Length: 179
Length: 249
Image (tube, rainbow over all chains, first blue to last red; front, side):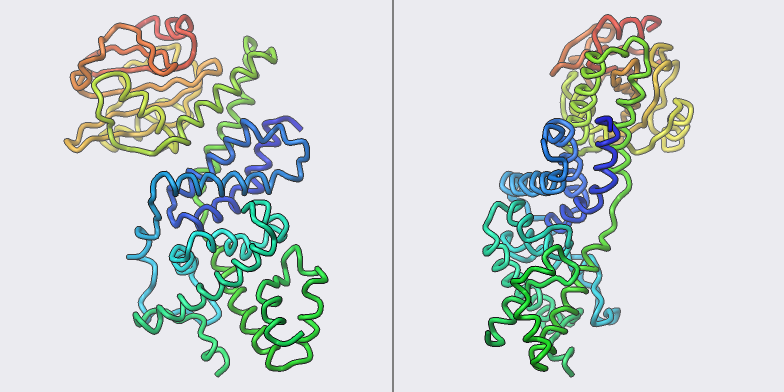
C-alpha cells in the first residue's frame, strides 16, 4: 500500500473518532478541528515510521491527547465557557430520560476536572481496551478505572444537579429510574 | 465479594468494550445475576452509560477537515504524474512540502482577519491560515465567481503560469474597516502557490515594494499592481520557476 493510500485509509477510519474525542475534550469545534488535523499531519511526518501498523490507533489518540494538554497548558483556555450559554436546553424541551443530547454530554464533560475528561471520553467511545486507554493517558490501568468511576459519579451528579438547581434537563436521576 | 465491591467492578464494565470478556468482571457479573438489588443498580448504570456513549458518538463531525486532509493526500499523488517530478527524490520533496504547507496552513492558527503588518509578514500569516478554504473549486472562473458574489476582490488577468496549475480553493480575509483580501490557492508543478488579490493596490502594506522579490520565512514572494488591484504571490517553489510562471507580469 502506498503512503498516500495508507494515509487516506487512516483518515477514513479514524478521523471521526479522533474529532469526537477532541471535541469531547475541548468543547470547541475549531479546537477539535485543529487537534485532529495536527494529529494526522504528525502522522504524515512521523507516524509512518511505526513498525507495528496496528498501533496506529493508539498512536493517533495519544498524540491528540498530548497536543490537547499542551494547548490547554499554553492557552489556559478551557472552552467550556463558550459552550455554557447554549448547551443546556430549557426544561420545556426536556429529553427522554434514557437519551442525552451530545451537546449536553460534552458540556457536562467540560465541567469536569481535566483528569476525568479523557478517561471518560475514551471509556464511552469504546474504541480502546483499558490497556490502550492507560497507554494513551500514560497512567496505570488501575488509575484509569479509578478515574472513570469517580468521573462517572461526578458526571451523573452534574446532570442531576443541573436539573435540580436550574430547572433544566434531568436525564439520569436514579430515583426517577427506579420509580 | 460484597455488593459494594461488585458495584466498583461493574461501574467500569462495558458490554460492547474490548475488555467485556475479561475475567476481572466475571465474578461481579455473576453476582448481579443473583442479586436483584445489584441487578437493578447495574441496569440503571448501564442505561446511564448507554445514553452518554450514544450522545458522544453522535457528535457531528464537520466534513471540511477530513476533506482537507484527503485533498493533501491526493495532491501528492497528482503531483507525481508530472514528468519532471517523476523521480523519487523530487516526489519526496513534494510530499515534504505538502506536509509543511498543510502544517503551516492548518496547524498553526485560523484567522479570517487581515493581520497587522506592513510587509510580507502579513501575507505569510494569512498563508498560514489558508485552510480550511471558504470555497473549493477546480477552476479560477468558479473561484472568481464565488468571490465576486461576495464582494471580495476578484483577480483580473491571471498569469498563464499560475493558470496552468490546479486551483484548490479560496479564502477571504477582512479587517475592521471592511477592507478585504482574497487568497486563491493553487498547485503548480507540485508546488503550492498562494495568490493574494486586493482591490486597492498595496498602499496598506507600505513595506512591500511592487515589482520586487522578497524572501520571508522560506517563502519566495513577489508583488505587483495592475489595473488598480494589488497582487502578492507566495510560494516555496524556487524563484526561477516562479519567475517563469509570472513572466508576463
